[in-house]
Length: 562
Image (cartoon, rainbow, N blue to C red):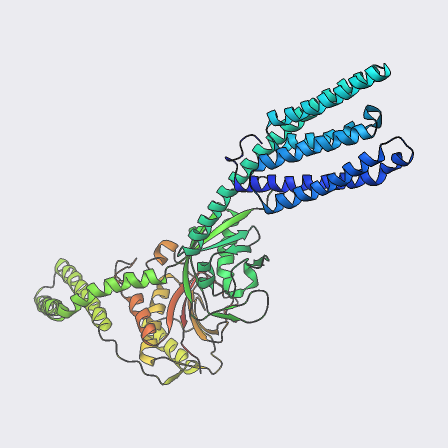
């Protein structure tokens, strides 16, 4: 232990504990010598008085050293030097009382010398070894002069050499261990700092984070993920993992993760992340408990953790609540649209009326094919702009909805008949499920407009086969009524889904981009929610004999069912 001050607090504490261990060992050795070596006193081979007094004094001094080292943790080297010096003196007295080299007590010197080699600098440890060696050599020299025998001197020389060898080897090993401990302490401090930073970042970040195994086991997560998913406890907080599939509400996340983890080359872009909707759920029993009172729209992003070879695979799922972002974007567009609405009636509708009237007058005089085609183009564009104006004006006229209960079993078949007749469709193309006598609080005119908009979009992509368009009332996990509108056409891509309900966003050259936005606004005005989800499942018997599966669906979640 060369430099004491540069050592860390953990290493200094280790040295003090080692010194305490040294004092306890000293007491044990003194008691054992006093108990067992007293046999030689009775046989007359040991000076009993000197031996006993030395052992008793040694025990008392050892107790004093233990008390001082425990109560006064200062001047470590000074305390160690005093203790080693007392050890050498006490062992030397016992060595003389037991008869010198022939007693075998020279091995006791290894105890203080090893302690000095571990806890003291090399120079101090070698000095202690030199003192012990000089004493053993001096005693052996005296025996030669008294008994004329050179054997004790040879043994003394070998014993002294062993003292120095033990000190050198133990000191070097101890120095290496001290360096390793210091490195471990520094690395541990760095790791604790990194963990503290990690906790601050992960706990305060707005995005949710889940740590998943390959099979979809949830091993951990941050508070944001718990809030987004409505979990009662922090994911992985109690040390036990649970599967995403254990909670039906998290099935959309489990499906996306399974598709991403499979790594199929033909997997759609939605499988690599995309958007999911977590519906309302309420679990009071079982391994996963919690409650989500409102649906939440999440954007998912996956990442693999670079785990060591042979370790269990781990992945991260980043959850971003995009509902607030979408609402903010819509509010900004709505604010701009509000300023436009203030003057749109006079600035746009009046010129449109004039253009339409002029076109009608021209149609009475012009009958050539080219003129008729040009007039038809003008009329079509006038009608398109006028429809856009009507949609914008509807947004500014948010009337209070009618709170009268609406019986879905009567409303939906009537709407289907009206819709199919309006578009000249076969009656079996649109399939309507049963609501089992349940009613909802939703303005009938508003719901008609919402469904006509959704069914109109479905016509563009459905195959036209029987039951290719389906309208199915179902109950969610919390007992609230939902209305699913889906077709057998291709699903909406994640890129389009990100802007699906934004005003003026459309993928059709003939659309205004306000239909779905107006539909969602009408749902919100009636306390309901309109969303699009990728998760699909069988929603009931299919008159065409199909499974009722689709690539996506629009979901209207009503505020309450009656």
